[in-house]
Image 1: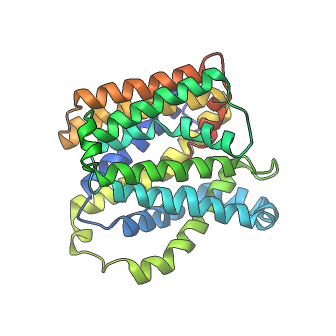
Image 2: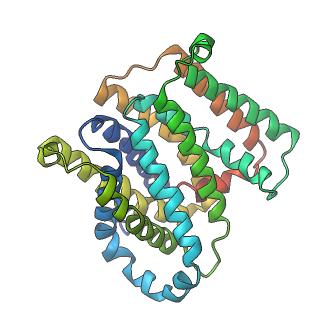
Image 3: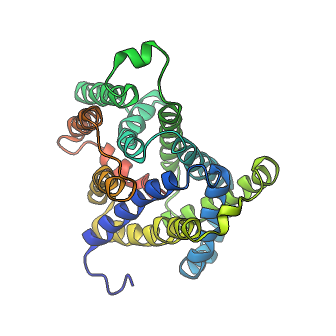
Length: 309
């Protein structure tokens, strides 16, 4: 498929579209499949689907994988096991639209995390952009009403999504430690395998019994979409696009996710964006634009961190 796909831009846009669909499917499955089971089955199936494409590279770079096993486990624990499970848990009680709009805050969270870890120093422009985006996230979380916050009526799903973004930022900063002799696709495959192994005992002990709805056609189709399109195919499309355009230019396509997601949420779930969501999204994206003005380094970091959505 990828050898006949000539446009890397189309590949990257396709990956963003499929990742956006993951939020829609996760929201549609809310109450039918518990978040841990959904995430475990997603990555187990995705690894089986990816195996024919990644096994050669994995075997070739096996020594590097073994040497960097601590990093691989940390990546699997944060970016795949924890982040995605929290995302599906958040989608139990918040809309797919709001979750996707809040995900736009991830580049700011990564930048702030890098500054707190001493990896880089924030400029005045970056601090201003971060404050604008954080204010936008506040509008999203409170639905544009301060009395929601004062009355402790904030949606639990929004807070879980915010926690997930913090964990995603930690995962993204860990990616900076990936050595040059460990290719990104191999590291991602290894971290997905590590995440499945980490989730397995928890799934066996904590997760409720498999629901009867799991064998229904709508649930199977949604799970199949998440594993095939939002995981395996999106991963291959993204890897192809990044290889052709580079991580900096590819990272810009991640910002299509709130646009695609809002459209899909309206078409599939009937979610109509509220004025508060539109204002919050505009503020978040405006803050990112301020930060990225004149090629700030957050762009390639965003791209590198965007593999497993």
